[in-house]
Length: 257
Image (cartoon, rainbow, N blue to C red; front, side, top):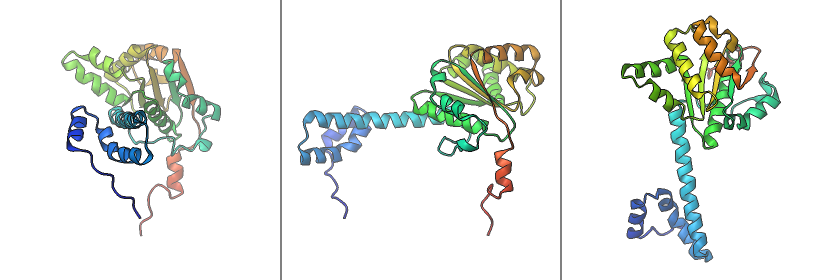
């Protein structure tokens, strides 16, 4: 048997809460006030519980907004990460998941064959960064070049790069899958240079960063990698592709009937 619905708030109180923009207090208040009457709570406890609901609701809304703004590609988190099947050493996984390196504005470079979990792990780290109350920006090298390239039209490159660097973690995913032209290399350099010793940057690539000069202009690649690796954790993955293994095992799609 369901408990009876708590009485609604008086119209005047509801209007005041709307005007003060306290939506989570307004939503929780009927049940909290009913419980407070039944259990004879101290008024200070009622106020504490209601304000705690507002803070909880606002924090959840902020996390949702930051996940949307980050531009994550798939929404993968550590809930689906199979740490025992990864070639990344367990101590390294644990150390990176503390996020202490983000607080120190250190970088992360993950390199290895396609399908070895680099993007999944870094995306899961990105979600953890947001859960810790920080901001994330996610790009591929192509999307970064497009973002910075658009800013060249109205001479707002510095402003756009500064906006990107407001994020605590900037991710540039899948470097090396395609050759990078001068514009992509320049955009990459601008962000790495602006973030240097101020924000954390994580890159994933099928190439070790020392080989970036094989896919982009050497001068820009050298300057970029110099800054990227100065305060960086370099993690190398190995093995076969998880995606190919799942496809071979028939786990890639739901069987047709």
